Length: 293
Length: 117
Image (cartoon, rainbow over all chains, first blue to last red; front, side, top):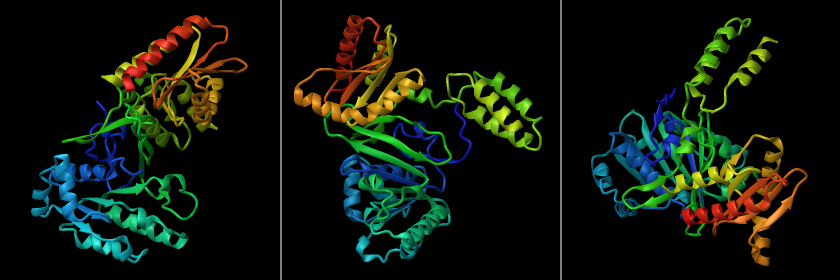
């Protein structure tokens, strides 16, 4: 059994949660980065629907599509229940042109906060953030950071972004991806083969995650389906095969001056997440040796 | 499942005597699946490969080549396109049975093509 140490939010993407240590971390900013046609909006819709179908509240901010277009896209994918969620007030769709909003300012946050029906945790989707993320200087970047902080306080956000930003992340004029807690990169090659559409976890702060390149498909009725192999999953699944070595190291760590207690806790954490096939003996020996100095 | 068949194909190829690593790359140089030991010389070749794959493939395509071999001090690297979007790279011991390895690579290439096309 896999044990997740912190609260996770299901992404709603079939096969993805297993690669993210159980899903997105709660109250985190998650950026979905990719070129045109990779399925960024589909990702956002799936994320919303997964929560809505489980009684969660959701706000979808669209800088491109109207509510009518979003509903129509959902129906194309087979997500017909979307209309019920809108009618019941569980899903709020905000359609606005980025050019009409002063940026950076907290106008954007006011807009989101006004649409919240309760104080409970919300799923927030912003699709796409591309226009907003352009023309960022240091001062504006600071404001973006504060917007992200505000979003974290009200829920768990999925923000989609055009691919070029990944490549130019450090040139000072685009979205600094380091502000996000998780960055997923979707890629579409266009050869009609199995690895045409791939997903990669670029960053997943404070969590173990899949480090490979995983193929995915966009299927009618399902949306995005990620297909990691058993071998990939095995690499992420903690094993208790080396419990004996860990127990011994925990006992020994308790005798390390001053930091003994915290070191034991850290080794316990390592034990709970150890998924490697090789024995941890070498690493444990090295840790104990270094900490004793 | 296709992905399982793909993994098994690489596992089988990696078990061949004299093969030190086999890596399936996407044509833009991003590794899809890797079978290798943690030998630092192999890792160095892998770093080199990531930067070279797309360039080598472009030239192979231009010259209509089916395989390209690079000889390093202790290893030989064989690059063979396995489908329109993937390329199979095999790192071998230069003293290994070349003919046997060549047959195994051809077999693996064909299976990979079946899986991904």
